[in-house]
Length: 322
Ligand SMILES: Nc1nc2c(ncn2[C@@H]2O[C@H](COP(=O)(O)OP(=O)(O)OP(=O)(O)O)[C@@H](O)[C@H]2O)c(=O)[nH]1
Image 1 (cartoon, rainbow, N blue to C red):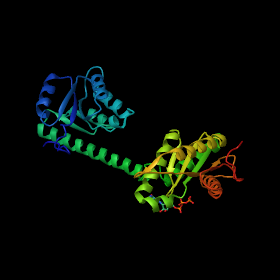
Image 2 (tube, rainbow, N blue to C red; image 1 turned 135 degrees about the horizontal axis):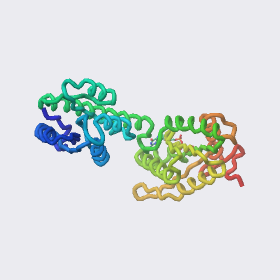
Image 3 (cartoon, rainbow, N blue to C red; image 1 turned 30 degrees about the horizontal axis):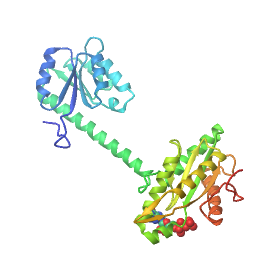
Image 4 (tube, helix red, strand yellow; image 1 turned 60 degrees about the horizontal axis):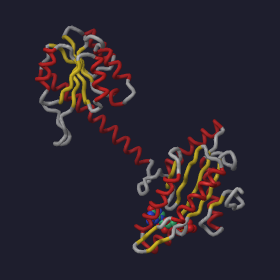
């Protein structure tokens, strides 16, 4: 009846027993000591303290009537807590067989199950195991859900945000900038003659070059910016609270940092340069993230046509606002 740990080396799960009677505590310790590592608290107040200090507690079994803080009050506190871990903790209450009022109240307060006193060892272990396994499965499902959501918005090569995440964040950012009349800019960057890097040094070297550019972009941006790879050798930055002057300064800083980077393939230093177009919401004729990126794309095209390795900040092909 042991709760099968998922790996052989995994320690026994941690169980918090909340009980003021020494006799019951001794009995349950005897029943459960082989299958769980036990922590003990004499009332709800102590139990809460132990829970706060031990985030790896996997399951709680609690008496109802205790001094200071009852099992009911403890349950309410657990279910109302901020951390998802406590909130979803399996809690089993101990009641007497005839105590259906307490039992029903415990369920209303968020208990997962109950066990009646006098306690039957087999039943106790079986019920604990069911709830332990269920909670573990839920945790695993939640972790894979989180990982899948992360994957859906991440570029697999550079680990930057992907095109989808850029447009999702961009749509929200445009709505915020419109509502609060705040600054919002985009910066669109394309590696120059990237095909030549691939053709001359191979696809793996091309991938390395993409990583180099990605890392420079991450280093030079703020945490609230979205840095995305939105195409093969095309990157876009979403810059909240950044006006067109600030964006032009950042664009030039990025261009020059990439130009200075010593990108080495084998024993050769391979120069990488980029062309950049920028656009600003509320200044340029754009009502949506698609249109904003469209304006930046036209300017990127102007930068390419003007000879590459340059930024373009307006429709006249200027490189600065000076
Ligand atoms: N290594 C590598 N290459 C890629 C990846 N995605 C797209 N590419 C290549 O990127 C190149 C893009 O070439 P082009 O669109 O002609 O542009 P370019 O050579 O950068 O020329 P300009 O943009 O005009 O300066 C193509 O050779 C694609 O095969 C990738 O993930 N890894």
